[in-house]
Image (cartoon, rainbow over all chains, first blue to last red; front, side, top):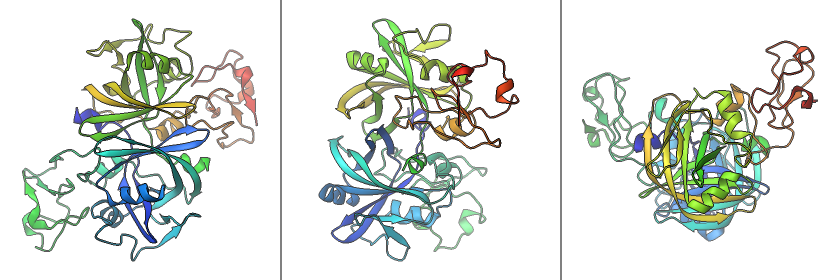
Length: 216
Length: 216
């Protein structure tokens, strides 16, 4: 069943929220438009995500639509750490929507500002329906699809994602597979043998240490 | 705002349902996975769609995931006519899921069978959360994204779609734009001047007559 589910199509988005006055956020693949009048989207977000708590309190979130120009660091920063522990917007350029929500303006092709209208509890996730209250198109770079992320950037889904699959294995040319236990990234051999990589080498997607990689 | 909304990413899917024993269906771009345990999807579907009535009665639907191999006829057949008036599955090959729902096996890369768990009324649309009860991968052809549909097939959104935009205008090389009033397709000049096309020429996407095209 997992193989069929991977055939569904998604974009990748940085959800922005406010923890009091502190900007925070996370990466999701689960934003689509569901009505045109009014213009509304849905967002499915894991209850375990700190961003989810912030959205529940304020009832507002932003959607920065990642483009193919988004760098790995952006995905690692927003997708594989918690806003509880780190200030994810520290050290990067961001703008604010009219309601003060953080939005990215590099590595993205546009953004939306959304106000939550209703919430359905799906167990692990909350399904939010939200009205779009603001939007800005930044450029015409291709949006990053989940397929592009998997095929070109060779990234995986973090455990809180609805599309998470345990121990994903992506085939490569060599016999051995060196797989990141956290995000599913498989080392592609582009810097030589895995064994000869420096010990401080880390997963280019999520930053997990070389020593934690699984060999399959 | 419409321009930003077009940067969100979607796949295209034929939703299958049963009107009693009669198979019917429609095209949507609004299916994504929202939880992994259990494996659930959401579907946003316009109340005006006949398929929507059938899903409400039986609580079951299928999702045939269109691939880039899907032909225009499939999109015209399922996207731009009503199952109230025509038997959309007549004359094409289809299979049945364990629950008897119709699914396509050509022009698609896989399909899902889904059981509705909850429904939220969004005004024009119903938002269904559904558990996946069956699935089949058919091939590894690329899924058809909405972007591919717009850019390569040059199709538009029917009025019942959440992404419908009134009078879409797509720029082309000539000064005049000949636009299908029904689906938004703009004639691309590939068969010569629009005026010199035969009078029985019709929109390659939705079948609307040449005479109905708007000139902008």
